[in-house]
Image (tube, rainbow, N blue to C red; front, side, top):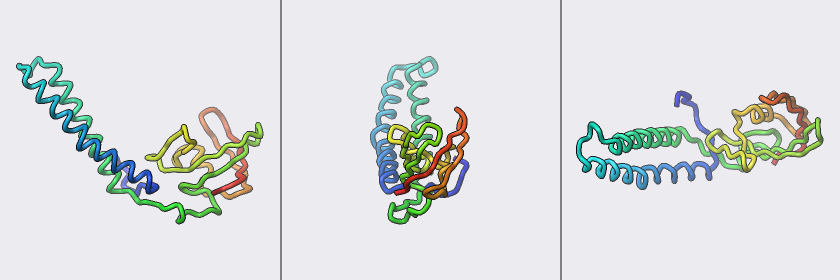
Length: 158
């Protein structure tokens, strides 16, 4: 939590983060407090493993709450109609052709908080996201990734 710049998010991502915070505060926190109370009733706290585990869970939960609140405090909601379609920017769906094997792939560029590899939502901080960012249709890009170099041509931005 050292970067103090804005966190760009979609409306959906912002709402998801708000729901996550609500769950952490009003479902998970009371459950951990109840577990601490139950463990405390077991007697001697010095040798009570359940109590210590519950206190560790509480500390972890409080860190999650603080981190989520911090993200929400820095969130800047970007609406899809505010995003340029001329270049690959945040929330753009970018279709590329791999020049090495002629395979087509479509990525949606998102903030790190909205990353979802299963849906091909890639972070603008990832190597591919950084490589595509700011590029236009027809441009060829070479992107260094851990497995080597990708040679892409951008064919569509939506």
